[in-house]
Image (cartoon, rainbow, N blue to C red; front, top):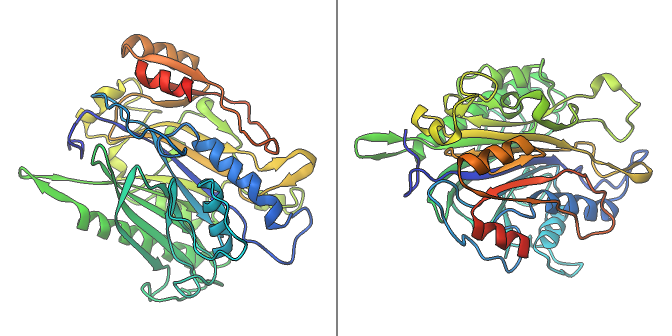
Length: 408
């Protein structure tokens, strides 16, 4: 398949973040801090992880130049357990806005906006699983939410679920390259295994349906559309929900496409607020999936030695560049959430490695092979309260973009 863009050789670097932020509880567990204390740390973490990506900063020059290989990188943020007031708070801070205490509407820009509805009534009651996106970079073509139940188009619980569960889906188009991608976010049932299994099956059916609706025909050739799914599965890799997704013909786990020595951070994504309590429940339950499966370049196997610029000729749309699990425990045992932040960095529709984590060898190789000027940056948060992670971003870009990044 060809790239879904006016310039077929243009890759669209994406960073996909997923984070269960923990709802704003009124009855706190031991070590749990109230939402007003956790909010600035969560926002700092999200800002830190997106700050040099296109569309994530105020007064930014969007799409300064487009090379024939790589467009400017951007991000999607997938969240879980977000109450309406929390969504208002997060978007206000990410958009660098000062809102009144009685504001009830989530900000719709100028930097970030969202899609998603609350699961209890389809409006504002209960938890959201929203997708945040940079409004100046992506156009929203289609949005829907379904409930993971036998009655998916109305607020409902399914099978042995203790709570309503929801899937948020959006079809986005990159404004400059016209590349399209389906973004999905969910939070599966924590009590009922059958609800998790059936929920995954319904998610897969929904993705297939939407892909079919948004696949276009051009010059007698079908052009497909890539998809990612991020969220809290409440399922370990050996349990039903993960296995149901893994064994499907559609999606694959981002982490499994990154060599172990190139993954950053912890294996575990869930610890709870009391890390010594029920350690057998701690593990990796948060995932980022890419699809269709046959379009994901396997950097651990067959296509490991194939140059990124040549992957498109093999029909590969996704080239996974990195995977990280960031910490959520700060000095003094301050825990901002029970689920840590997971990131996946990919070049969508395939080309150069644009963002990587601490990879000197890749930096030198790409600078030589692709005649790109490399700018190594050590980003630090502007907020004094946030813990610095100490890792570096490595950007491979054009000279003009490097100068702009260094200037900013």
